[in-house]
Length: 492
Image (cartoon, rainbow, N blue to C red; front, side, top):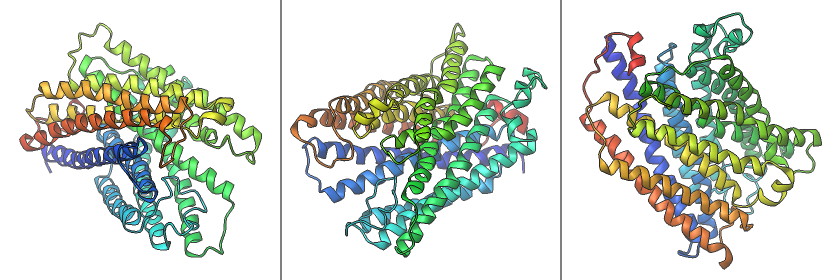
């Protein structure tokens, strides 16, 4: 098979995953808008329908972000190591089948536990849903998780095959002084190694607790320790959700370095930051359990203290690196580079309210308010999503003759302002103690919900324009790319 055909085939696989992710993200925003309109008293929505939408919104948004982020990571990592295209496609098949199962379970059988599926809620719904709905949702989630687990096992295999070990993929031999910084793994490989390690751990925990729940749903006489189940659930959910930005940030390293014609150096501070983040990401999830007094106190203290440090190493080194690589570079600001730079703002600003919430005295007051989705919408909406759509514009620019236009730039401005509006409405709601996950609001809580809903409509509009650009790219895409070998793929 010729190099052009190989490259085109790889791009086809990535493109399909991106377009599915983009459509799902916009669909999840629509569900979010409907929920906010209901909370704002603009429309009427039954409590059962609200919680079904809440369940599908959280599950679908994280799933779509992970699908898109893994496509971004896979695309660039494949420049440096030999990844399996069959495993990549297997993950997509598992994802699609799992999503269909989840949708049927939620909307046809009224399953509505929220994405957390906290044990023993799937089996004890007080008649809100039955066994079939719970099994469809849990089984669909398990299938999605297995697909991703296979994908990350394959990335680990490829990294070990190329560099000798995952430790060397993180540059430990460079940190130890055994190798020169010039011989350090590329930034994309370092980030992908971190994601591989944390996600294999997270998905194993998730599969374990999902199987536990399935067993309990089938036979309620078989019970498990609820505290263990909750720890496994958040060890899975927190790590996997946060890993989406670590997958997508590979695009920041690759795209900004090419836009500025400056390499993103894997120096010792960079490598140490990623190793620190690997460890911290896996052990900070107890900040979700600060209100569980039965947890050992030392674990809760660890969850609080390490939450302050978790995002800082990679965030600081990446944000600072983005500033330095752009500074006096003469960069031509286009949609890909603009969205990548915007994502640094979203990541940084989204981490601030998260760190505030990780403080125990604040957490006891704020954690069950809309403050939490405020930080997460900022982190995801202007962080991960900006990286994903920035990569889509990058791929369109380099893989076709299509050009951006005034509508794309208009959508960029609308996206920025409206996403700030959505996140800000949640943060304001949290500041006035509006509880999260409530289907109805009292009048005092309705104003921010209405503002968030109207802002969400604009977000959906802006992202739809982004998707239209990507569809235009699919229509006019060139039949082949001018490259002569795998070594040149890094220039694409």
